[in-house]
Length: 286
Image (cartoon, rainbow, N blue to C red; front, side):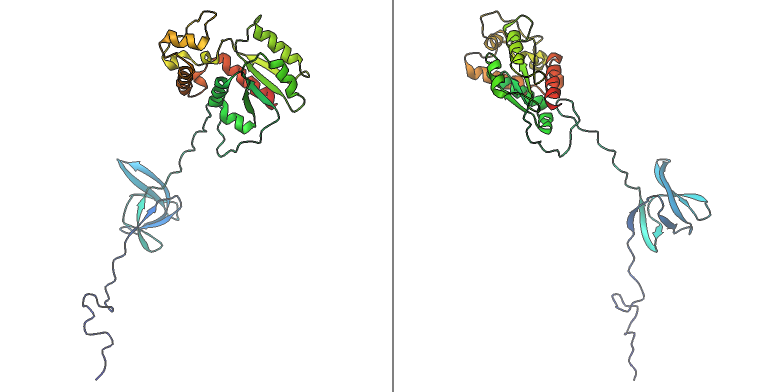
């Protein structure tokens, strides 16, 4: 008696020797230009020329080896290399992102590391001035390697310049409050420039008594910064005029943080300050 090498029932479900092959699952494939596919229904073989919308649906245009083209509805019913596929729209390359900008409006440099600090410096009168410059120009200054230092007032500026000893490769840019012709500040600025070799010190300023006024008043809900009488400490007078707490240094500090927090970019500052800071940066990095 011979052995039935095919088993007792070749048609039985689950038989390892069944002639029925499991159905192959169609794989989604992007219809990229140049991909050679076959339409199962018609047997048309061609390379993908393009994918477009027609009548509200996506279609694929195939070109055969004779240069003839034919259009098919995108989706199932195609073969690639003998395997069933579902053609899907090709992945479009994302449009390049617009270059980012720093708060100063400069082109942002992605991944840039801070440069080692230069010998040159920018001086400002006080901490509030330094914080405002950092707020808007901080990214630019780190890339350029420029350090901004507060002076705690400009009265001793000439002596500080002499102690700094400016020279080639060691320039000094200074931002002064209330730099108006004929004022004490203008005389101090001129003396400071004379205290160093020519071309090594640049003193510029804005016209306001305090750098607070360089912030556009609309940013804190004002039509204009109030005019304060001589003899009244400017910050305290401003806070009293606009109805903010003004009982001591803590109130002044809180007010400044509120003002500084309203500054998002160069657009929130007055042009008279923008130009001066930009000029100082150019001077010390030239």
